Image 1: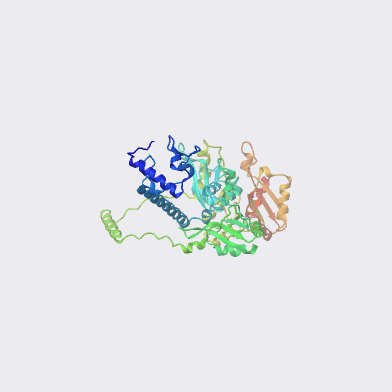
Image 2: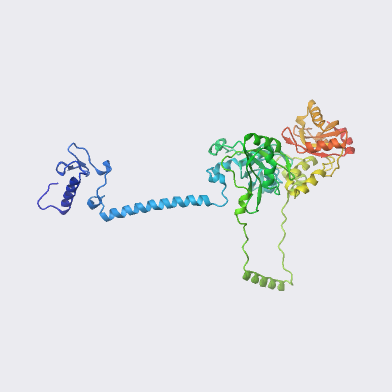
Length: 527
């Protein structure tokens, strides 16, 4: 644009600004050698653009004008800088606030604070349980599977057409070690006359553990701890295997007691391996301990000592005005009903015992349209009740001790009762063998093992005659009852103490004494 004598005020301002820039040495090109392109970018004598954006320079705030779409005045520039400073301050404040809230979340395990992905832990702690008897519900499954760790939830899908579950469920634990124990011990176990199928869900990704810290070799997981056994008791018992760095039983804040599972960390891996080999299935406080290597790394979770810094939850007190009004209402109702207040109906929740008692009488009638009918013998029912009622029958370690020493076994698979049998020269080993396990060496193998406790007179393998005479005869999964006769009662007692709850071919043995007179009658049907 040519400069005229009557110069426009804005052009005069531009010219003055260029002169000041020249005097400060900010620009290397004089105003006379510059010319303006079609897009407003200045060009030097060589045709190179000198735009502010390409060189990263910002014009002096005192020289800003309102000309052009992007021009800012001095006041607008100052407001923009204040807005940017305010945004930076607010961002820093929000980040500090979120960090503080994360550290102060109540009940958040140390493992999650340390950066462990909660979703990965939840996936690893979830298992599938199939082939469930239709008489058993969520409470029954929880009672069986909680021996491996605290159960967060049991999810059963209900069939609308039958108002029953579909024969399977998903069990979710709090920690993945509990799920691993359930997979190892419950797959193929007998429950309600059916053989459970326990595994991972179909959508399980085996690579999920890659997001978690690697396991600590010297840390072990312990479960099925009696509620009366304290952290100090556990630590004093396990320190026999080596120096302990930390012992933590996971606390239940509401109940103010532990959740029957936790972790123990030794100084070295050798101590951990020795503790697992010796203490797994060791009976403490009437319950067999479940011990295995820990899966999760990271910091050791808070134990029972953390409850000392937490106040117990207190129920809110009912105001006195509410109590006075309630008393007046009750008095009015009593006057109208002749002094008798109506009582709400009592709803009885079916217990595990009730459900098991109903299985044998109803399984054939009600389950026939849904699955192949299955009968439950006294032997199977005894095994089921031992698993399901383990928590209900134990009120204290002393009670369990007296129960275990006097518990017997069914006198015959056809009686349908569970009598108590005093110690004798004969013990019965249940859940030890199936028909498919019978071979010429099985009898010899049992006799050789039991001879460690005393002189063995005879080993008898017995199959229920009802199963032998049914159409089709025996099947490979039919249970075989094992009877061992010793020369004296003391040898039988020693065998009972060692063989009860011992494992054989992946199955846990249930041992009990057996009546000698009834044993003589069983020999006729021996197989």
